[in-house]
Length: 307
Length: 140
Image (cartoon, rainbow over all chains, first blue to last red; front, top):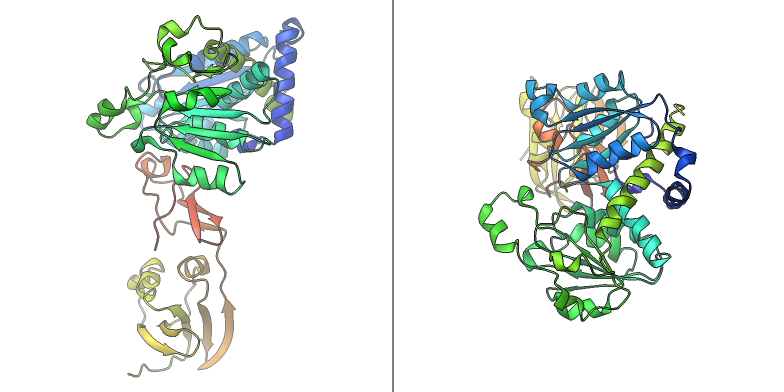
């Protein structure tokens, strides 16, 4: 059974196909409004989420399907000690496809190994969040017309930020790209991500702690939140949480066509005053995420012979 | 120093010096109800120094464990005091229930009944990563 746990589970051709489908959904929503009639998506969210869960549910409703929802480990059999494997087997009896978020890394893979329906990883701890990357890719393509030759700045928590790792991995398949990695020393991109996604592929990158010094070179600025839930030590979190705050003043040094992105939720790393700037694209990302999830749900249901 | 030759059993030879004890532990030989000899820092034409493990019983051996600890090791099966089989060892693509994930956030640490699976991600550096969370295995 085909599932999507991480971005490399999708070939470059499939990513293109998903983006083309999403563009077609945006242009012709009525064409897709009954595609999943009679089908059920189970959203199993064992970790807090607003955007991702609602996005999956909105995606399924807009395809004409239905949603079965579990939110929070406390309200499900997980609270009784049920394993992820048993949960996946059980939910497969009720739903045609599963979207799962879980605080433990690798939980989605365990679910996919045991489910008899496709599983989409909606975030497994600090590990992967492939559908966020799908949203990011569509946003970049819509805003920049493509991927080749872009200078992409990634700023904030590059150590624990799963969206950053997935995005670098996905973009590393494109040509002529350059990355600028902006982070405090303690939150630098892990060396294995640098080795596998950048060094091995000969992709140029620079590392800096200076956002203002780097912002003028960028086509894309991808801001991230320093995530409290990824720290074992509260002191470290408090020391690093305000490392970078994007303000209208800092944006004055940026290009007129810069695209500012953020996986959301933000805390204070992008000032609210930036929201009115035409370069702010993070709420467009949210919308694009829904279209990409619609495209992905359709693709996996078709492959499973359920559409 | 002499160790008696064995009549029916297994000799793991050409183990890199210093890796013999690790292999002994990972193969679970301490719980074996048969004589086992570990020779360390034995002179070797090929390696300079090597470790050897002799097991005085023909037991099922997990060759993946040997490949993980030292793919250069050789396994000789002895029957009736003669060399019956010589097995070549290779770096395994997967390790199942050989080593454990150290990442406290990993599902395999939380759900103990899951198989501990590690995949070879870099043959050159002998790097293994957890199938579930992709955390790198500790260096031996």
